[in-house]
Image (cartoon, rainbow, N blue to C red; front, side, top):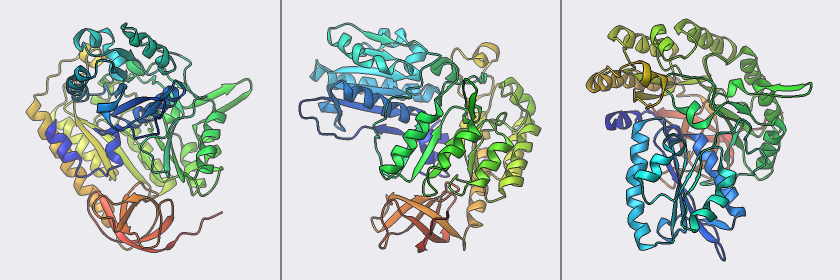
Length: 480
């Protein structure tokens, strides 16, 4: 696992890592007269967006966020259950927090999110310092659960809802750069992939009212944000219906894009079985919808895809890729997820995954060795029969191919102008700014007189597999 993380980070930008092993914590707010809340979030962008909802709920209950875990009155770990490694990290963190709690007996610790939903009472039995266990659909109940825990009782609510979307809650933007923000458009998942715990930890799929989404995006734009990312486990299956009115994902994309040509729109994640030509033509129609699609493959072999219950085969996936290239052109960036060493995968089937990478020419990817998750159909039906060293070798081969292709794709951009939204200062030098291109490429360039939130035209002069470098030419005029 450590090998996989180290290798993968070579080809993922900082923003890309958010979907893998990133941990985020809250920042300091004025807390005069308020209790102090520390939230540590693990895993995916959905978890980070959920933490912003939790912060909003708890603010109304009299809490202010803090970046100092030692002085917190209440600690929430918002957890991920997608792989065993993520759960082990949380358990290790809980043991560290127990040391702090012994020095501060009044402190409360809560485990939120997917791991809480999956393990439920087991967490309370095994992790004695845990006071609150709350699933992803019960965040409105947190103030009551905290009050219950303050009396010495355990606060538990892991009820999964068929309706909850938190549409009426205005998230508190945590770790915000004031430029980019996430908007959850749906919750849950109906895709019963055999390896995945998400349908069991986040419940059934339900779409949020499009007008609440539109209002949130409009409010963000008025506040100065320049980019929103529409989030869902499977955004392409977004569908809202009320009486005679209905909105699908293509329609929602168009609604948000029309707010302003200065507001960039991104989305994640797409599913190969659902992404339609209508969505692709909507992307093409609006310059401010970014030409970047994350389209998980998971395997390049049809038999493996079938036992994964992905509901498409290799040919279907490649047809969707061909449609992306036909409608949006070769400049549209595409990224992927790929699992190495799934149950019963042969060497020939592994080579099919490598050949898929070669055909598609992905810009980057999230690559993992298969990690069996208890309770999933794969764990019940199939033996995890690929030896760990074989998994790691196959994963290394996938990473090597992807890294070469990522470099080739980036090299093609040398000598081109890229419109960059400035997101912040480069971590390596205060003299440089960093931002992303339309295709979600990380770009670094001298800051000169520009400021965070500007759109800047950057001439690309050099690159690595993960990053583009260049110099500003001029600010890009907004196209109306």
